[in-house]
Image (cartoon, rainbow, N blue to C red; front, side, top):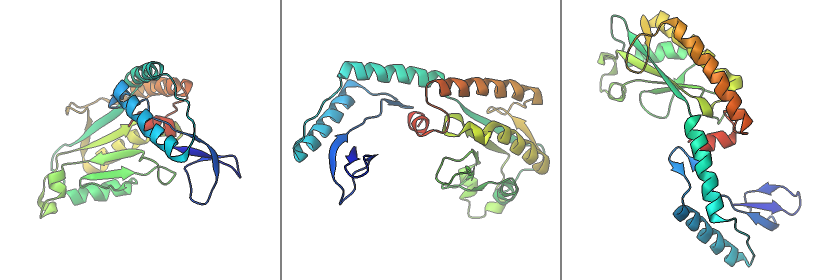
Length: 232
C-alpha cells in the first residue's frame, strides 16, 4: 500500500504525520510458487476494500480475470527464464574440516551466512542478495567437535535473477571455483558429483548472456527489485 504524499508528490509507504490524497494498493502477480489465483485476488480485493471503507475513500479495481491471466503469463515467462546454478567442489583426497573450508572461503571473499554451513559472497551494495553462496553439510557445521567432521564436497551456487549482471557473478563463480579447487585440492563437478571439463563453462556463460538480455527486454533485469520479487 502506497500513498501519494501531498507535499512532495511522491508515492511512498504511509508515514505518520504526512498527508495523502490518493493511495494505490498492489498485489504480486507471480513468484516461484506460482501465479496469483482467483481466490488470492479476491482476498486482495477484500483487504483493500476494508482499508478504503476505513478511510472513507472510493476505489477502482481492475478486472479479476484479466489480472489472473496476466499472472499466469508472467509465471510462464518466469518458469522459462529462471536459472539457479550450483556446482560441486569435491575433495580429491583428504576430506576437509568446517574450519578449513571457512578459512579458504574467507580468502576469496566469503563471509558467514545466516545459517550453519552457509557462507556468502556479499554484493557491492549492502542489503542486496549475495553474489554467490557456498554451502556444506549442516550437521558438520553444528557438530560438537567441528574440526573432527569430514566434509568431502561443498556447493557453489548462483541465483541468476537475484544478482545484477554488472557484478559478473558467473565469472566470479568460475574464479572462486578455480581458486578453491587449487588451494583445497578439489575438483569441479556438477550437482551429481560428475567432474566437469573446463570447456563446459563457456557455453553456460554464453547462455547466461542471452538470458540476461531476455530479462532486460521484459524490464525484469537480473538484480532489479522487480526480478527479486518475481524470482523469489
